[in-house]
Length: 404
Ligand code: CTP
Image (cartoon, rainbow, N blue to C red; front, side, top):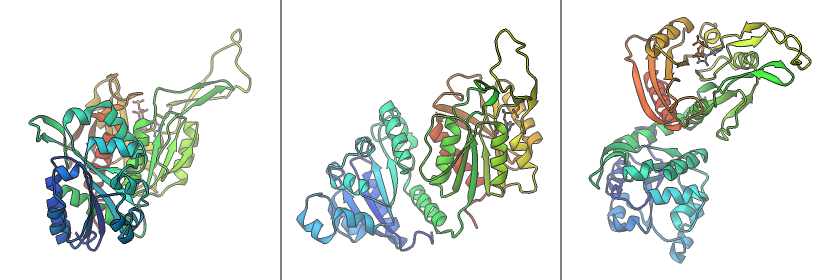
């Protein structure tokens, strides 16, 4: 854990039974020579005491926004500036609602709003609360602010119910912090390219061929790459989506343009092709609008297969990942696509299921690796943002992106 050493971490403890685990987190981080300062919210005080925290962190616990003593010693701005990272553990449902809506009515929410540092959130709540639409919306909003969500895990909860909502285990939180500090310590960032969205192939000035791709999965993957420290460029066909502020966005319309821009960005470390590039383009663009009483036939040409061309180019990125949208024989089609296109991993989804994939906020994917030593995997149905995080986690682990 050498990257965590001497780091200054500001831990915010909000109200939740998992707060007792945060005491262990503070103990372990202190042992790793991190300097820990803590903010305990009003509800957090119901679960752990300032005394127990101070004895582990060896630092004073901050609780009040309007404390004369605190403000003279270290105000809410200095607290955030002092830290290398802010970690909220546990992050209660109420606290997530508060910060996703921009409230700053106590010390913890004010520090986060005034912060210029990376914020990591470790949600912990009952499974129904976690799955509630309002919570999912909050999580998506918080992600769009650039905050990193760690967990939660699936398991038995303090309330006796079972499901997703348990705070991530302390050792895994420490692991994620170490990976983060390792990534940002690199002099040269790893470079990633993502293609996303549909393409539009013009027939005449008013008509085009396109498809149902919304681009959501590709945008979430690009966002997740940024959060994992990649220098990321998203090459996107027409969509209504807004990506993370910290990535480079190149907007294109046609498959040809997408191909050209992708080639210009090579070489890179990781390329993920999620775009639903139109297989066909019009052979000869009609300069004038085709009239309904005239000949309406037109010839088609195949678009360049960007994934295949990149995988087989002499500038092939270290790892190339393709997607496979299949409506039948998912396993066989995905495996033959992997073979034909020459990429390192194919992520396949079943587009015959209307609840996932095209236009939906959900997805479920199967992973097929070129390396026969790596077993096929499934990421079960979840929000596309969660699928993206899981996928990037698997890719960076399996292909050793952060182990030099
Ligand atoms: N792809 C690409 N360029 C194309 C067509 C596809 O880069 N001209 C990429 C997609 O981004 C995806 C993968 O290839 O990563 C597979 O796309 P898919 O549409 O599932 O397959 P196709 O190659 O179009 O094959 P088919 O239509 O026969 O299923």
